[in-house]
Length: 218
Image 1 (cartoon, helix red, strand yellow):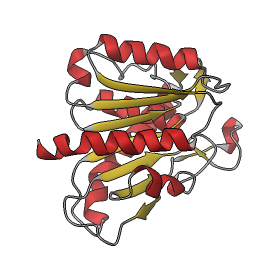
Image 2 (cartoon, rainbow, N blue to C red):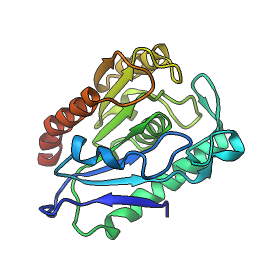
Image 3 (spheres, rainbow, N blue to C red):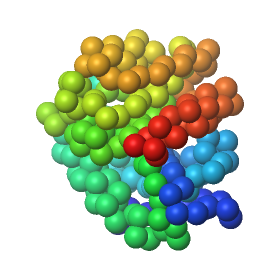
């Protein structure tokens, strides 16, 4: 079971949305915890910690979801291990929460966004809403953007136009692949580098609020 933190609103009841956020490389489960009241104030928010120590790969004292090989390629083995760990985590998590949660929103920043995209495409229809914040579409044997893998999922992809870590052009390539597959995709661009600003947080909050009612009704 991955380590995690949780934010449960006092008024949370059964059926409350569950937002699972995955951090970027070299940080930890506390990194995105402060986003909870800004992007999903009425949801149960869980921030999970990656299983791989980042130091051996040169990522600092935090944790990583995979070793980055280059461009749009995670190392296959570490990516696969984290995907399996994430699948087990999402399967076990609901039973550990104080309320019976409703629709799942899976997303993250940088490596966390890449992991979220990969998980959704590996498990078609399992995740109603996916957030990719400054990530990329991973090139991995088990990840494919196609009509049958994007069906039933809505995607939000925000990216900084001056991102030095994951270039904006790489984000555009991933977005184009999702669109070509027929994905329900909403995109937002921001004049910033590799990060999350207030405007993006507000856009995420608005998108979740607009998207969840229809998913919950379904």
